Image 1 (cartoon, helix red, strand yellow):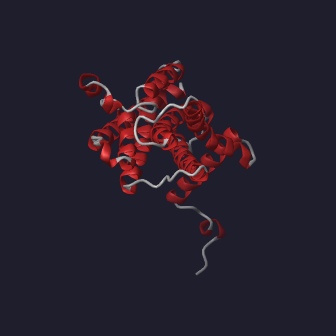
Image 2: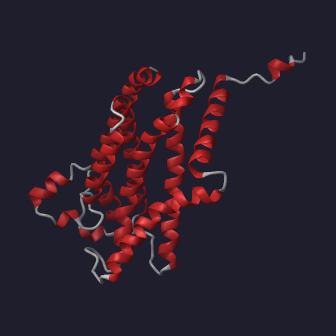
Image 3: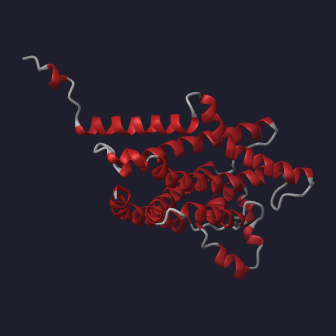
Length: 264
């Protein structure tokens, strides 16, 4: 027995949700990056430019790397995870403000907007990582770590941390829109204290003890420990993962309260 035409083309709830998510991702990319791939390329290359400007400054001043004999590798291993964390946490927060009108449609929930931006940022982050690795190879630097699995775990932890803090930021700006500026200033402080330009373990023990409560610093050290296993860098991976998961859980619980605030 042949089904009616309407029944044949009726979508299941799962298919409908994927369709909404796909539409949000496409809209996000087109509104932020323009219709061409060049706009998206600029966003991918922007954190890479940040890394290589830092390397160029230290190379021009002929400053030695705090660890190892390769400036480019030292700064890249610290800057990439910290920047990925900061970009994900910031862009997830901005997605709510940029896509607020979409939440008035019954098919689109605030969580869908957040999830679509998270997926875009994960892909963008991995593409930026590939660009950095490619440039390191081009300048004669070996980007393969002594322990690839540890390096990848540190990088994934940075993404997870960005998602967790990003969801917290979504909840905060639902009540305090000015937090976007506040978080930008806080990110500068976080970046400076995350060990991108120095080796935190060389700090006095009393200072280093408190610095390790910064999960972004632990992400940078996590990746660096894969490249410099002889440095004796100790990373509390469980602390970073639990911090990220706890932040994401709190943020998701608060999002339902933000929905009514944004709808008002």
